[in-house]
Image (cartoon, rainbow, N blue to C red; front, side, top):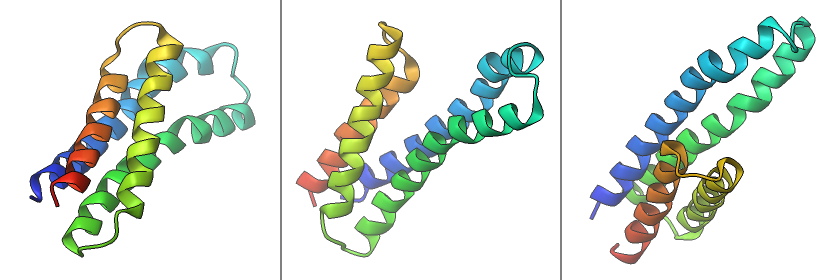
Length: 118
């Protein structure tokens, strides 16, 4: 069933774009105008902030490509662990349900379903 891998890839792109776009607007933008006004500091913080977005999108797409190529379960297992840890970390850090953390947990579950049913 390719559907679980497709879900993982789509959610990976959604969570990555939302994290980057909303993060720039809501979190980083105000910091850049105050505390992080220095250009070099902004560049480093921006890079560190967006790396998880790239990882989530890349792993989501990799799960789909792995399924299309009938690859081993090593990549999806690794992706499921990263998605689950990211989701749990998000929820623990914020101490409340957050859409990003919930989507990451859904990605972990869909990845596990992809492994189980294929």
